Length: 279
Image (spheres, rainbow, N blue to C red):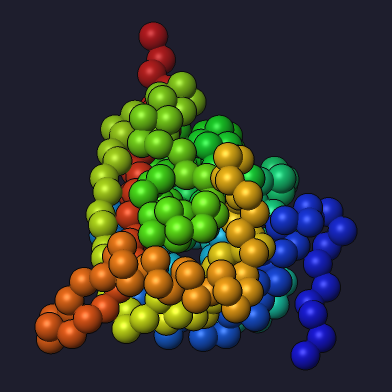
């Protein structure tokens, strides 16, 4: 299969991420936690009637489908990094403007009603930003006064087992950093909540397979801890990884069988752009 072409404007890291997700054809089948997060986000949307909705990082359309079925809006804008997802996203929301590009650098045009969104929502995407906190200032620019910003990301405890054993993992801002950024950008009614999921697998190798099937690479799209040597996967390191995983993170599943856990630590954020009050 020929590798998908990436726009020249994408950084090497973003091209790599796009390729991973472009070929994650079984994502929806294995991304059960991500699907649960989408439902949680939907339940936190305050108004079902919207003027203009902007979704950032739509991916396979898990959140897009829920929005299409439950939210009414005059205008829809769906952003996604992978051009290969255009057709499926357009089929979910035929009237939507599908905006392919890097959400961190994409410019929204004034004449397409994108600078006055009443709702900006993003599911399972912000952690892939080079600077996730930039989402806050971007959203403040594109939201109308009183508009809602709703997204999820993950805490520094996400995939803690992988980080501990390999030293690899994405950088996740802390809750206090998100809180500070939101206040500084003029948001109010700020709500941040966390939820932990310990997902069990029969073997450590099954953990790695799960991560690959959900588009996550443990050695190419993630950042390397600065105080550790690069983790190289080979026969020896894989064997050591499996031994260490069993030793440090073994558990019993609901049937009392031996298993290992992988931790998802989800952060859900809801905030509103401050209203402009005339004096």
